[in-house]
Length: 203
Image (tube, rainbow, N blue to C red; front, top):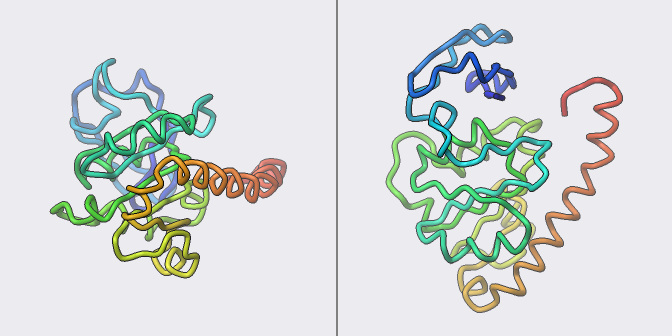
């Protein structure tokens, strides 16, 4: 299982057989020597009924929907070819983000307003290192944005923004537009990732 150190963002591969089921455990990061703690509530320690874990090599890409009414987005995103996680809190979203390589994360204004201790999922992604962030297409849906306004997206450190009104009125059309944007994004980094792999470096 791949775990990401919260201190330095180093990816650490921990053999599944060494992960205690249903118990909290901790270890020192081999890179920064900081303490990495996995609580008993983290997805990695749950039983076989836990949701799938998405890695960079998963046959079907993973997406995370951060919306208080995730069912409104579920059908659309599944038609786009993604398997889904739909956390109900910022704490859960931040926790499962540590163990999954998502291609797409959708965050809505409603979810951002859900009370939380610590950073929201949007704040976590905004603060993420480039090696982690560049692999995820982040879409924000809110009432205070203009659909596909690149400057607003840049200001929010997301890849694209869609207004709530447009999402309600043009759901199916937007799905096609989002698919096009994510495909373009993937192509733009494809050569970069291939070259980094040839050099034996992590992208």
